Length: 307
Ligand code: PSU
Ligand code: MN
Image (tube, rainbow, N blue to C red; front, side, top):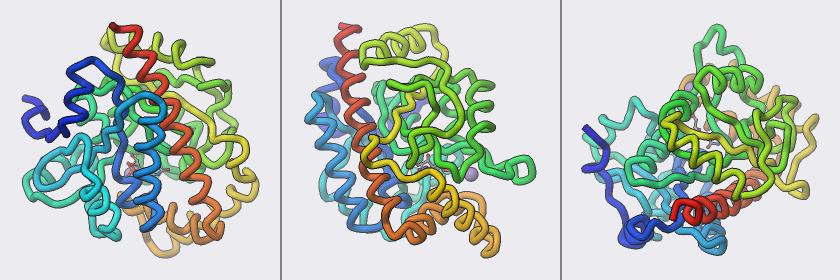
């Protein structure tokens, strides 16, 4: 019982993994649902380049043609980027149905972790993780990302979680699931577009080597995933008060139009993009690239420590 027979790993990723080299997984919901075309395609290509420039191999993960692709061709990236909202969003509960139907789907943090682990990839870079939505005490809307982090041994480098979520509740659930939250050069849990959320990380690390040491031990002990929280670069960060105001408007609009469940996160992202006149998208791209660089450096340190 395993995902392995359903993986299509590109030859260059397979060769890097066989040699014990550094590989960084990338999700695809950020391409299919997180950003508009053509910025999504440009971002996807740039992020792969950033990983290569930092000494690791990128492996973008997506579900296409009844397979879990680990590493995609440029033509496949183009295909994912051009789905224009028609692709499915693959959470854990969707995997079997999507592999059966052959539909094209972006993989979330949860399903990208599943495929990365099956392929033997330790590091994964994204923008922000899913978490506990505001009002979860009535909607029960808690992302499957948190549960996956609790059980699947992959280290996810993110810029924290968006303030569209309830950050204190998200940190509480991460604690319940036993997920260590490492602050990369920070004591503060970052809030995606802003460098601070008001919440704190559990442990601070100040180098890729220090992060790699904890990640290696977490995996050796069989304790599940690790979350590395890496704040957006100062120059790209948005003003927290301004972004908080926009988020409140977007949430009210979602309630007014009845958007919820799996459509909620993509809807809020699109609405905030409109409300900030695109500034949120530019910041989003900058922080993903920054996370890719840090993930690649940690992957290199981890490969050196384990060989
Ligand atoms: N947060 C972002 N951008 C994103 C997502 C989250 O800032 O694109 C995507 C990720 O793929 C994440 C998913 O895993 O949304 C979470 O969705 P949900 O809340 O439905 O689990
Ligand atoms: Mn949800």
